[in-house]
View 1 (cartoon, rainbow, N blue to C red):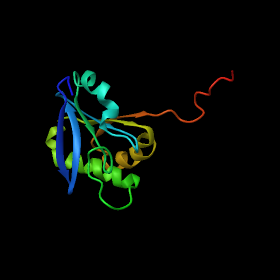
View 2: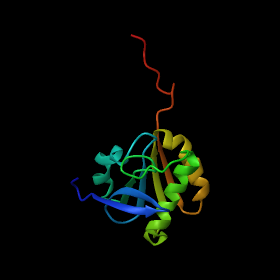
View 3: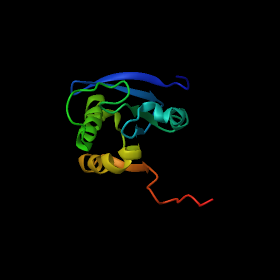
View 4: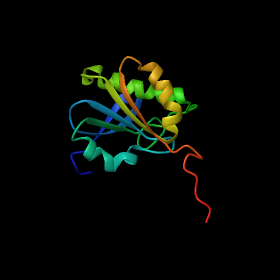
Length: 139
């Protein structure tokens, strides 16, 4: 994958979970939108890893992470992220956590995560383009 990116798998509450990791220092978790995968951030992991310990995960039911039967609600995704943090160990969180979420993950998973991890989160960056914010000019 280049630029020191490692592909690791973790058992998160019985769900085999793939995480692309690089760098050291303060943790930065990158979460793709629904229908996406960790490679969404492939071009960003290398540069960000110069400043952070970057973890780009395939959320449950996406990419190379397991797809257990059942409903995939925003709480399901948020629980999975919290489970990854517990699995890796909060010891890897020497400081407060930083999250970057894109697309539907930004608009729906972020609120659930923020309430679950209120004492751990320092920064949440939402990467989304709301409809109508940048209207297309008529030609």
